[in-house]
Image 1 (cartoon, rainbow, N blue to C red):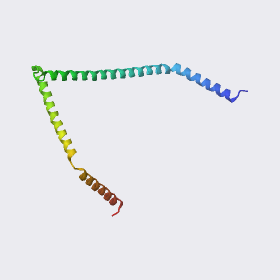
Image 2 (tube, rainbow, N blue to C red):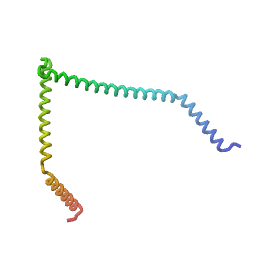
Image 3 (cartoon, helix red, strand yellow):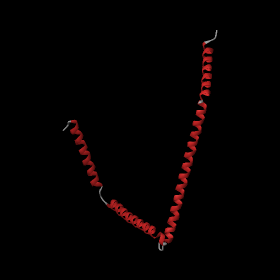
Image 4 (cartoon, rainbow, N blue to C red):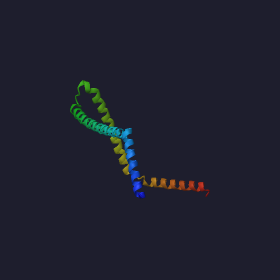
Length: 141
């Protein structure tokens, strides 16, 4: 008489064989292989896209350095075809310098201002308002 262990083992093995047979016949392996190949293709496409994006960023940095060098060397006497772009760049540089001066002045004002006491008073008043509002909400007076 066969033991339950042997019977169970043979049933599991038989079930496994049947599953393998069905999967081989139904093309599950082929479907898996096609899916795996497609996943590899998508991964390769992503890698290539990232490499292209990286190359474009590097190229843009190179163009920027080249343009900056060209601008600096020809700022005083640009060719006629570049005059509009040079004027635009000069206008942007002027606006940037104005903003930098404004920022420096603001930072100097902040460093020299004695606003600490006023801010502390505002914080205390805010905390008192919160406490009073909470007390009103709880019905306390």
